[in-house]
Each structure stands twice: as C-alpha cells, then as structure tokens.
Amino acid sequence: MGLMKQTLLSGLPELGLTLSDEQIDTLCAFGEAVVRQNEVMNLTAITEPSAVAKLHLLDSLSVLCAAQLEGKTLIDVGCGAGFPGVPVAIGCPSTRVTLLDSLGKRVKWLQEILPTLGIQAECVTARAEEAAPKVRESFDYATSRAVARLNILLELTAPFVKVGGAVLAMKGSAAREELDEAKTAIKRLGLQVEKILDFSVDGATHSVIVLRKIAPTPAQYPRRYAKIKQNPL
Image 1 (cartoon, one colour):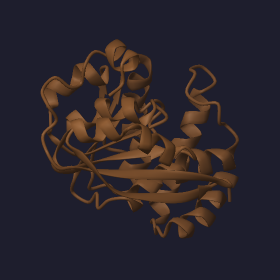
Image 2 (spheres, one colour; image 1 turned 45 degrees about the horizontal axis):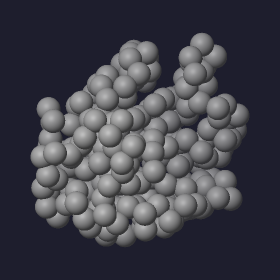
Image 3 (tube, one colour; image 1 turned 45 degrees about the vertical axis):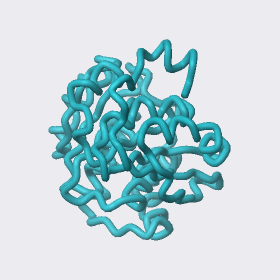
Image 4 (cartoon, one colour; image 1 turned 60 degrees about the vertical axis):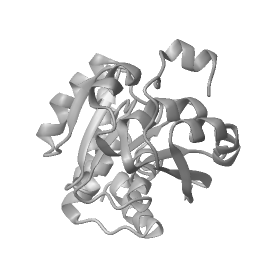
C-alpha cells in the first residue's frame, strides 16, 4: 500500500469520516496527479506523499465535517490546485462543486484531469470579484483555503452565498485572531458566526469557521480587489 493511501486511511477516523475504497483510491489518484503536474506547473510546495495526504487531502476533507453538503451547491473560491473543492467532490459526490480560480492554466489542467479520474466539478476561470455579480447569492456554500485574511476573504466569498447558506472558511492557528479582525466585515456582509471546528493536521491546529448568511450581501460588495486589499472591511 502506498504511503499516501496509508496516511489517508489512518487520518480519516480522526475526522470521523468513512469513505469507500473507490473514494480513497480516487483521492490518492488526484494527489498523485497534482504531484506529477507540479513538475511542469507551480501547483504546490507539498509533494511528499504522506504530507500531500495530511496537508492537502485530509485537510480539505475537514470541510465535510463542517456542514451537511449532500445535494448542495458549493463554490471553492481561489481553488488553486483544486483544494479543498476536489476532495470535497470525491468525498461527497452529490455535492455540485464549482472550482473558481483566476489562473487559466490551473483551471485548464483541472478541466482535463478531473474527467479522467471520474470526478465531477465545474471549472471556471475568473477573479472572484468579477464572477460574483453573475452568480450572486446562488450557492448553498462557499469555501476557500489559503487565499487571504478573513476580513478580505469574506468580501470575496459571501456574495456567492444565498441567504440561509454559509461560508466555510478554512484557517490555520490564527483563526480566532482573524475572526476578531473581521467583525465589521461579518456584520456588513450579512453573515453571523455559527461555529468554529478545530482539527489537528500534522500536529498543527487547522480550523473551519462556519459563517451563516442571515441577510443579503449589499450590492456594492464585492468591490474591486485593489480596493478590498487597500481598505478591508
């Protein structure tokens, strides 16, 4: 058994998740595809098999512990190499996943590789602030990992989510500090903190912050990214 699969199998019970052999094999196949493609395209600094399993695959699957995603729509904003969106699509196939990234090369690779692995997801090349007005408040969930600090990230994700849905923000050890910093953004964007789930990933604390959408996001958000970065909410 490969090291990636072995690490996955030992980590899944800690998340309280049970996946089929086929799902586990598909997760490993995708992890291996990312490592291979990384030789010609900058996708990840993490390439050692057990680290890929822990820091990419298991970390991404923690989203499944944060919300009931069966039959729901989810957009992964700034998906990069496909994390967390692709593992979510594998772990919960009834979730209709949209992968959004501004880098066309990455999205094109995802469009090519996912069908060969039997993974269903819509792949879109666009900046979040440009895509949001076209599909405003049409997703049950938006998630994102390693894109920006929370007060910036929420302006990029909240506009996608319908009232009653939620933003599932993946954060590291500074989750609570970022949450405190994002109080104004949370209020202005129509969100409310529901819960924070903490997970131990390779000895470090990773968190999924669940922010429920309780009111429509005002039409002026999201602003242009330069403005968001220059003057976060």
